[in-house]
Amino acid sequence: MSQPPQGDQLEPEDSAAPGFDRHMLEALVCPATQAQLTYDAERQELISRAAHLAYPIRGGIPIMLVDQAREVD
Image 1 (cartoon, rainbow, N blue to C red):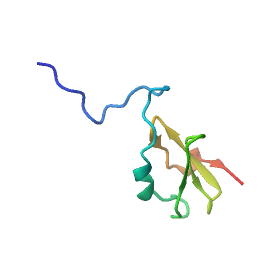
Image 2: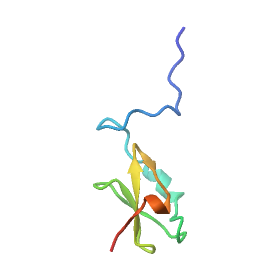
Image 3: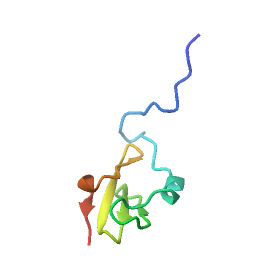
């Protein structure tokens, strides 16, 4: 009998990859300022207005590292 896929296995990053879970946004804060984040679905980023940083979301996983974030106005 084959085992069902485990929930922690990720699909390849492509157009079929799952989107960001918006419920996760309630638990995440900016690592630089501890401020609330906003979700930009078009750019697949979490925006910290307080830090002027945009954290990328890759394959549905937010990359919450300041050195991976881009500066925003």
